[in-house]
Length: 118
Image (cartoon, rainbow, N blue to C red; front, side, top):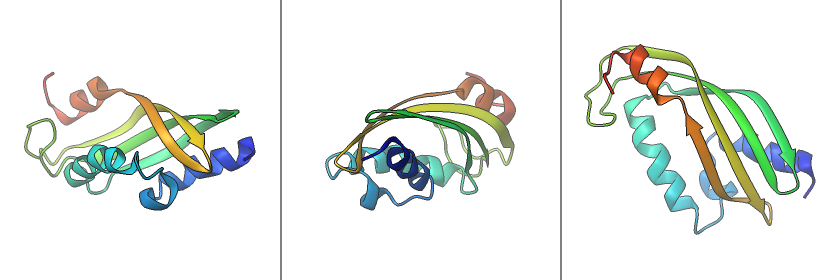
C-alpha cells in the first residue's frame, strides 16, 4: 500500500468502520477503547488537523470536542462540553488494515473544560 492509501485508512477509521479496517485481533481492543467514550460523549467529534505517513505508519493529529452526557472515568455526565482538545495517534498498517495504535490525549485539558478535578 502507498503512503496515501495508509492515510486514507486512518481517515476512514474516524467514520467508525472498525471491523472493516482494523485487523481481526486488534478490533476488540479498539471497540473496548472507543465504545465507553462514545457512550459518555455521544456527540464526540474528531477533526483531522494533520496526517503524516511514512512506510506503514500514519501519525494523526486531531482536535476533539464533545458533550459529557454519560459516565467517564467514574464521573457521571456533567452536561458540559469540551472543545479543541488535542489527540495524537500513531497507527501501524499491515496488509491494508490497522494493526496497532499508540496515542496521547490531552485529558487534563478535557477534564478542566468539563469541571472535573484530576
